[in-house]
Length: 587
Image (cartoon, rainbow, N blue to C red; front, side, top):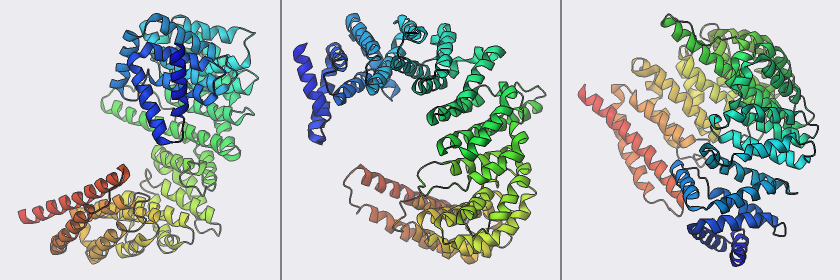
């Protein structure tokens, strides 16, 4: 065993080496050791226990240990489970389990977290088979013992959270009340680290809490603790507390009535005043309520058709909050970030407005339009862009009274905002125009006035051009065979513009290339018969482009994926052309 430890130590060091060759060789050797699993598991657990070893290798040992028991692929995961159950002797299993429990007391937090993850993976194998029955008891004793240090409380709660997050609730049904009690008590701890771990554990344990939510006194207690945590002085605790409220909105919507007024006040204040991450989750709570109420309305309509009572009742929380919530979300739209890849409260607010519009339909317009009217032509680009985003976000859902606002806004969007000096304004404008074409085509009374600036903006940056492709796609699809003649004067420029956009230097950004080819496919599929000669001419061009793809330099998998994607797009165009020409011949 000592020799194995020496070999394992060398491999763990080499597996952390920045040199790819050395690292790959070490990883292959470790994989080879899995052929005799018990000594490897024993060695990895022993290495983690030894505080004299470097932190990096101890953490890597824990990661490898965890990965011998689980995998993303379901078949591999099942094979690993059977391997562990059938090939690992009880002495080794017990050593590994006890070592991991002991490591929950390690002075280094990263080691405790890694050990908690290993315990959770072990529990998924052991607990459903009525093995390791003492695990939950040990963890709960850690929480009830007044002498337990805060570090052990934190790692215990983290372990419970990891277990609850993945295991089938039925497996722990007999312990559910005790687990929930321990977790909720942890949320009341004065130590913010313990409170945070408990909050995360509750997030995982909510699936177990159905019976507790059915009992008013227990539900009141849980909600009291969660709502108190939502105003914690610790940012991370507040974030997780709102995540809990979001999940409660999904799992236990029907029980929210007594608490919605307090939640309403907390969420609106957080959206306005709290840090971005907390504000995002506060917005997400209302987005989740929208999802639930849209679903409940569908269930009610289905029940009505079948002359039965719906199983669940919609409480119309969103409608009740509308006049206060929408203005707060509108202001949140002005908190844009320059980094488009980072989700932020402005993006969350836009998504929430879209969901609200789908939930309450025409009723949203009266509360959204004042902000749009005031700021659509603001000198401050942030308000200009926010008003445009607000307008675009409420287009799906409302059907009647919004048409007049579209008619008023279109000239501003087409002739000013689509040429704005700020790229964010142009991007949001192009997206809004695409949504007008999708949901309110009948409001586009002047097709040339709409097409000309959109066509010109295909030359803009990828994010703008991609949304312009979306607008062309939606307009052509909406006009269909019956009204597509209106596009004939612009047909050739549109096709040429889309083909040019698909070969721009930045065509691989913002989904521009696929968007351009998808729009082209729609134009071809709805093209009127007088344009057939022009469609036929496209065949040679597309085949030429396809032939060029076989000359692309393919060095790695990324290059191969790019080549395959482009070939797929071009083949789809040829397929659509063939279908359209075949349709013409059959006539």
